[in-house]
Image (cartoon, rainbow, N blue to C red; front, side):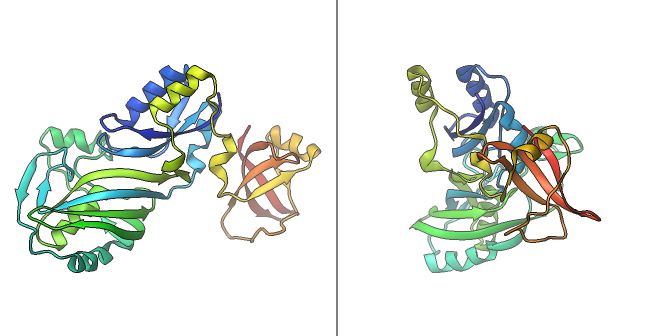
Length: 299
């Protein structure tokens, strides 16, 4: 039981809850996930099974979400799970004004994470400090939003904006909802969140727990192949004799760099044998003797 599970996380469960339930269903201890989802959020939660847990660090970091942002309301958690701090009519807003404000959130931006988040400060989670009543000044950090697309608009006292957001790792959609409300001077909070893509896995291909239980009962469940989450990495196919050295953890002098662009920094590769069996992850470095392929993870 090795590979990846593209889980459609249900609302009401933490990511840790999903790991625990997956362990019970699959009868497997070695399980990990990529990219925490808040309990109220649903959608793609990539789960690594068995030895695939060693590859979580190499998965793609970009993500995509469908978010409903409620304007005219502020909460202490920046979503509807929290306590309402203030309300203000958003009835004067129109879609054109909102779309102009959204432009502020595309590209590389500075973002302050929500006070109720899993980020650690002095060894403690922010949500634990917030629940204890402690006020912590969280420094802003740089995140990247590739694209925001408006899907729907419902004006009113509390106006609901539905958007698709494609972004890089570490981006808080709750913070975008909060900050959009600040720019528009009416307050904003996240009303609903669905992760539609993570680590290259798509919502359309995901399994619910009910799907997983059904497939397990029928004996038809098969994890996604270990290499399936690594398609973004260029591949190097090693001849049999060299592949054996690689599997023993040896550095390989590799001169065949056709279609590989030389870079100053080490470049990661998906390493395979001649039959395209996955062997691990390596990177190339320049040495006096030529290009050295250095093992990072060997299977």
